[in-house]
Length: 410
Image 1 (cartoon, rainbow, N blue to C red):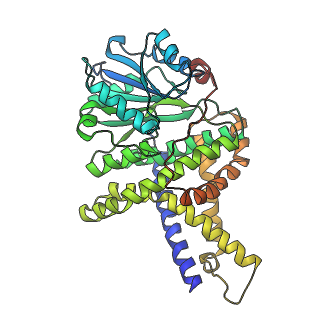
Image 2: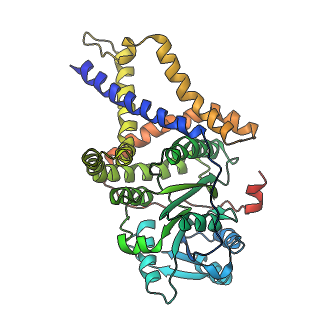
Image 3: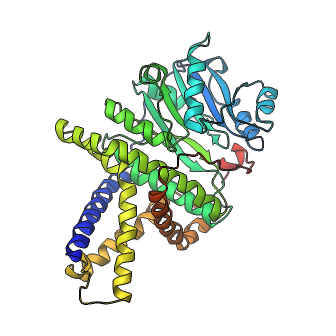
């Protein structure tokens, strides 16, 4: 009986893997054509910050030099429960600092919801809202590219997420490689298939009227994923602007990385619990492939969990053989098919680097350390499953001061 359960679960996981691999093949194509529009849309640029005095100045300097008419955008720094000089730095750079103090409702989602209410009550109203994190850097043409997409009628836009410090450690290199992989073989493939993209927490643009109509309402530990699912439910599909690049600072140490990823997985379990079945039923009822894909994406955290549990179970069975041997689907498949599956999985990462024209030999060398990073998701997700009701937001400290010129020069 146990073998039957194992095989059924393995078949389910294999089916999802084949589905995602099939989608990834459409990421090999890249349509470079994009209609351009004269600057027309006005933007409220929100910078979410909690004790970010070390890095916020570099981003604000970057934002003040964007290739977009200065009269068409204003920058607001959300100083959320800050106890340092974040607000002072913002004011010294002629940027509006909006200070929030609420020890009960902590986290980026709550801070954004608070800021949007303030924004809607201001004398000046904007066509769209753009959101960054204080540790980010952004390409100078970011707002122009958002303007183009808004003029084309898009309401929710995600920029291309990159890493500003990939060379700092094997951990930051792993983040960079997975970002390049996800941008190309997850996000772009869905763009090419005209499916919904998924928000990444920063480098996001929203039409103001949509935000006013929907309300933010995304206050989980993964507010970006939560808002993505709310949009898909509503029939509003976020798109990816592949040219609008945002550079995000990533944790240097494994401990800081594990803490950040634990928060992501805890939040992901909550989103899966709230949105998987509604999206799945809606996809069946409406025969809507986009909603089906979103449902599969929400439940991917359970795929990681099951993958870990099944793998550990098989290892234990091998180490402690008994009469009731656990059978695996691998024992029923030809060896060459397993080899093809392994190669297809492994080669996606170097393929993504080549497609993204990554020239650093160091990054290709870090493909050897990447498996340790990927495997570490298993125990993190396992622990997150049992602590998913912990909704306490944890801050990731940012200290890496880099200028946009340095990032572009790499």
